[in-house]
Every structure is written in C-alpha cells, then in structure tokens.
Amino acid sequence: MKRIDQLTTTRFIMVLLVLIYHGAGEYYTAFLNFFPLSPLLYSGPTAVSYLYVLSGFVMSLVYYRPGETFDVLGYWRARFVRIYPLYMIAFILVCVYYYASLFDIKPQKILANIFVVQSWIPAYSQSFNYASWSMTVEFFFYALFPFLMIWMYRQSTKKLIWLSLVVWAVSQIIHFTLWVGYYPVLKEILLYSPPFHFNSFLMGVVGGVWYLRVGQNQRINSRVTLFFVALSFFLVAAYTIISRGSLSPYLPHNLQPMAGLLAPLLILFIVSLAMDGSWLSKSFNRRALVDLGETSYAIYILHVPVIWLYERALESSALISNPYAVKQWTTIPIMIVIGLTAHFYVDTPLRRWLKSLLQRISVRTLLLDLAILTLSVFLVFRLRFGDGREYRSYQEMERLVFWAAFFIRPLLSLLLNSLSRANLQNGGMQMVRSVFLSTTIGSVLIAGIAYIGYAVGWFENFPRSVFIYDWLMVFVISLIVRFGFRAFKIYKPDPIPA
Image 1 (tube, rainbow, N blue to C red):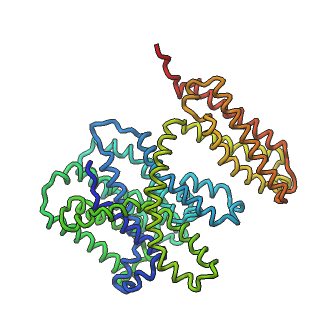
Image 2: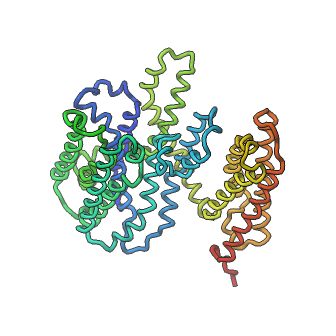
C-alpha cells in the first residue's frame, strides 16, 4: 500500500495541539489566544480523538489483506516493538523525576504503568506520565484489531459503515448519560477508559476499509476532495468554537469531545485528505513536514517527563531570573529536536534490536518468570515474618527486593540464555545450567542490594533466610515451567538433519 504522507503531517499538528493544551508554548500562541481562535488552540481532546481515528485508518491500510492469513502474533509483536521502547524510556524519565519518593509508591501502581494497563484502573489512569494513559487505549485497540480485521474480510462495505455508525451512536449515548449523571465521580472512567474510545478507532478502521475497497479507485476532481476536507474541518472547528462559547452553558460539566463525539467528521476529513491531490496535500507531503509527523509519537510520549525535568532544572538554576519565560519560549523547539533525535537515533535502533530479541526468546517464559519472581518475593516475606508487626517492619525491604528482582532477574535470564527458544527446544542440562546460573547470580545481586540498604541504615536487620528461600522457589518453579513447556511440546525440538 502506498504511503499517504499528507496524513502523517497531520499527526504532528495534532500532537502540537496536545502540547499547547498541556501548557507548552504559551508565548508562541499568545497573539492567537482570543475568541474564537483560542478554543482551536486548546482543542487537545479533539486532537486525541483524531489520533485514534487516524490510528484505525492507518491500521487498515497496512493490514487489510483479505487474500492472506492474518499473522496475529506477528501483528502484536510489531505493534509492541513500535510502541514500547519509547514508552519505557518516558516511564524511566518520570521515575527519575520522582526518585526521592519512588520506593514509597505502591508496587501495583508502578506495575500498572510498566504493563500499560493504567487506564483500566481509574485511580492509576493519570499516574506517572499522565499522557501515557492513551497507550493503554492503543494497546486495547491492538488486542482487538486482528480479530476485527479477520471478521471484516467477510462483510460488505455497507454493513461495516452502518456498524461503525451504530457503535458510535450507542457509545455516545452511554457516555453522555454517564457524563450528565455521574461526573465527576466517574471522571477517570469517562475520560480515560479504553472502551469509550473504541468507537473512534472503529470509525477509522471502517474508513480505511472503504478507502481500500472503493475510495482509492475513484477519480475525483481535486476541487471536490478539497471541498470535503474544508467542510469537515470547518464543522469540527465550528463545534469546537461554539461549544466553548454560546453552547458552553448548555453542555454539562464542559462535555469533552475526546470520547469520539466528532469521529464521523474526523474520518470524513481523513478520507477526503487521503483522496486529495490538491495544493494542500502537496504542501503536507513535503519531506520536512512528513519527518515531523514521523516523530510525533516520540514528542507525545516524551513531552511530559522532559518538560517536568526541564522545568526543575530551570528553577534550580541561579543564572536564570525568569525560568517560566525561558520554559515557554524554548519548550516546543526543544521537544521537536528531542523528538527527531529520539525517533531516528534511539527509537529506530531500539526497535530493530527488540524485534531481533523477540525472535530469539520465549515471551511466554519471560512473562511467567516475572510472575514467578513476584510470587516468590511477596510469599517468602509472608512465610518468614507472618502478617503482624514484624512483617510490616520489613515492607520497605520487600519493595526494594521486588524491584531489584523485577529488573535483575529478567536481564540475567536474557544474558545467560535461560529464555532462549533454542534452550527450551533442545534443553536438557544446558537449560538447567542457564536457569541455575541466572537464578543464583540474581539472588546474590539482590541480596547484595538489600545488604547495602541494611549497611547504610535503611533497614534494622538483614534476614539471610529470605534470600535462600527466594532462590530455591524461583529456581524450582522456573525449571518446572520450562520442563512443562517441553512435556507439552509448546516448543518442539528442531529436527535432526539427516
């Protein structure tokens, strides 16, 4: 499928609106910050909805192949590789920002962010990098998309269009009813819960299928397509302006369009622009603008921690008399430079490396290992100290041990090949040796970290037995899992050449 670069450029424009909505670049937009233009400048929620619709549209363009078998696991692997590396870098930067209080944060809140499920838990939806709630929504879309696409292969275009409109209408009715009756009690659910954004994604997916089946084969005068681009943009802009003006008193609790309210108009804009061949599309197709569009994800996911850290650095500098002004003048240029650098020199190499790694290792074993180490840490402390006062006195050490294990054990498993598909297939003593080494070295390092905490006065005692029990539990259960995979032939041995 030929790239539609004019749509890529619009992604950068939408992310720029999100940055402005989050308070960046106020000085750049000061001369436009008056009614009726100010509602357009601060239309970040509409921009997020647009990005969801565009995501569905682009997914269809890339993966709609009715004559081929849909590679579900390959699709999930590709989307994980595309999103997760920069997501984790942004998360780590937020942890750096919160370094002083990191061990006071509940492990489940940190895990919710690591596993990108924070938007499913209302209390955690805005935790850490508050912009990353939308990645939970995207992962929800990715989980459903393969099955949605396989089903759509057999459906008529007319049926799909009606389906998308019905889903959109039902979603809006439910959302509006809850918004009127239960805002702000259900605020986090109404704004950030993935199901309320599915209608936007579905609208985009169906729009992409229509474009591939019908639209791309049409020969329409560029004046017509430009008219529909302008019409859809005007209607979205008009609603945005009026809803912040004369309609504002009649919209309960400042009703936001982020949950797909404007999705039909947004998909009309996207499809019209995709079919457009006018001066507008040619302008949007310029290499520099397309490159900015390619970096939009990097800018979006990194902007919150980068701005926080940058703001702290400015405020702590004795050489800057007006840190707020410096921040406002420099944030957007800095984010563009960081986005370009991150996309071309960090994200792209990381994606290649992660793609290669995922082809060599067993992801199922890695996930089970994470579950094993989590179970082991919290279980051995309970077994050793019970549920009373003594256990509570060791909870800080328990958290430190858990986070040390969470990062050290998987890293050693990768380095020592205990997650290797080849070991799982051809196994035997080589598999046992790699598990023994990774488990033992990991336990020594974790115990060493806990001992340092004891030596510097963080903890009153150093319970050696905990680390022995932890080693034994992790080692035994890890071997059981691996031999279980072999017994059930989840990973079959490679055939011996003749």
